[in-house]
Length: 129
Image (tube, rainbow, N blue to C red; front, top):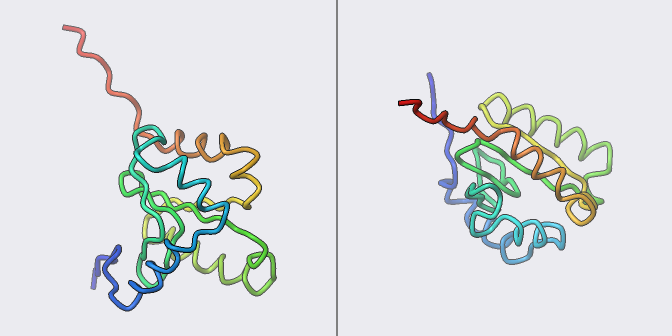
């Protein structure tokens, strides 16, 4: 059966998404400032979106791009294994997964914008007539 995955529609995750949006980490808050109001190449990003049973940090529907920010809790072997399974699952659903350690947001946000730019569709060619 070809079941379409659900984005933002899992009711049982709603309180968790809301809580995560209210209590962003410093890195998430900083990146959100760069993303809100379509400041990233005109792309709309959403924060703390559920896809299947996962809540992702940032999601751009047009690019099918997921951005996850990793702080200290992600640096254990157990969490790294969970993150790997999560990433593989979401990639199989057709999403582009990008993970950045928190310092990248503060020190090199251009790395994130470079990855976004690589996913942008090529500009339409002008009609020669």
